[in-house]
Amino acid sequence: MTLETSWDKVFPLSEKVNHRKVTFPTQYGLTLAADLYEPKATEGKLAAIAVSGPFGATKEQSSGLYAMRMAERGFVALAFDPSFTGESSGEPRRTASPDINTEDFLSAVDFLVKQPNVDAQRIGIIGICGWGGIALNAAAADTRIKATVASTMYDMTRVSGNGYFDSNDNEAARHAAREALSRQRTSDPTAMAGGVVDPLPADAPQFVKDYFDYYKTPRGYHARSGNSNDGWRVIGTQAFSNARFLYYTNEIRSAVLVMHGEKAHSRYFGEDAFRYMVNGRPEAGIKPNPCPENKELLIIPGASHCDLYDGGFTEAAGKGQSKNLIPWDKLADFFTKNL
Image (cartoon, rainbow, N blue to C red; front, side):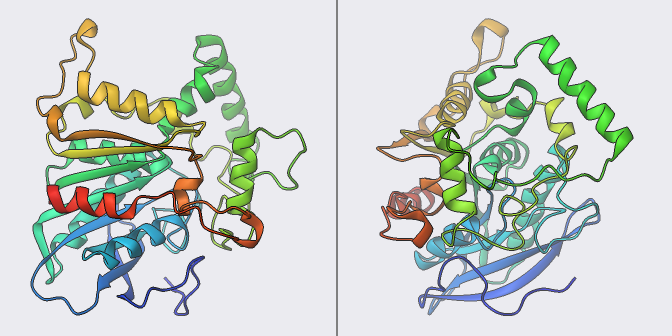
């Protein structure tokens, strides 16, 4: 692995934190690359947070910003590239797996609990966009995770199997998608699907315009980001369409904050995930959560999906004036209370 040594994030380095590149292994034999942010002038063992997302992004983008802001507030914070993406190992590039991506979060926790300045009993995670659903899946599996934030989350298994807004939630539509992916595997399994559409069609939905404003402009573009460039392999998320996250999230006893924008097209993912996590599905014999008191749903007024990537900007292409829509102090308070 060759790691970039210069500062190449889409945000400036804070003077309040120390930063260094690190790597760590996963149980699938892969090696993940990460940025470790630590607050300056601290003593003793600190609470720590692992961060990843959005799905198709890199640690130089939103996850790194989240990690740095948490380090400014006194946490050791680790932003990592998932398997097969960014600077992390794995071939072929830009492919995904429900199991491997959940393991990525668990391996990040493995790394943090071994750090000399980290209190192993005070570990949290943040998942952004598609990694919000993966974070909830990880929290349901690993009791070392004491607090979880799912920010502007997608459930990648739901959208892969059902389409946006569950518009393809029927057997015929899923069969047609399976047929297309099956043909693709035969014709060219290495073909790339492309990142965010460019040039942007005039009639593109608003959420596609929002993605363009983040991934394709100086606000968030990065050379290693799939969303900014050639995207995922066409068959790269095939396993997600035939799986489901969140089945046991109604049994998560640790603290969870689901944070979403009021105007986000993806808001239904977060609200439905929160409702299921707290209430279960009694009609299907799935019981309510035994610890509902430490679960919280936070809707950010006026925020779109991508506003929670970096706080939002009034003039995206030139970075303009920040809308400051991410409640950093609220996140710090949540982790301080629960770690």
